[in-house]
Length: 93
Image (cartoon, rainbow, N blue to C red; front, side, top):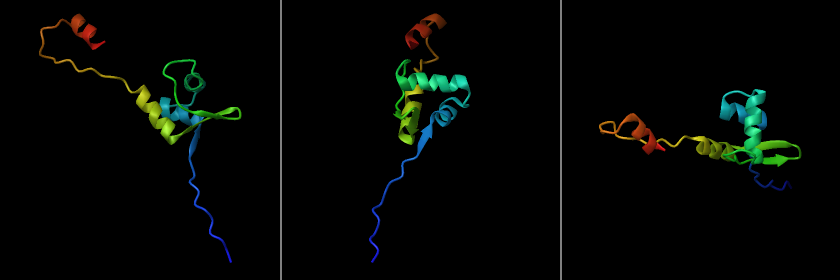
């Protein structure tokens, strides 16, 4: 009699090269270094990920969180104001 195998959830992970392609658009050495410095916490924003022995890995949830961290904060200023361009730029910060 065969015993049923427990259901295992397979988690897809991405290598540093794949993560650089997704986040930066290409996997060149400079893009990989950019992602690696943020995974290590040497640069801001710090991206989520983990190491398996000597290699960095990111799950789909880590990639999604990284995209949210890298999304620019856009402040909309009404166009029908009497502010000068310089004043509007100061308010946007």
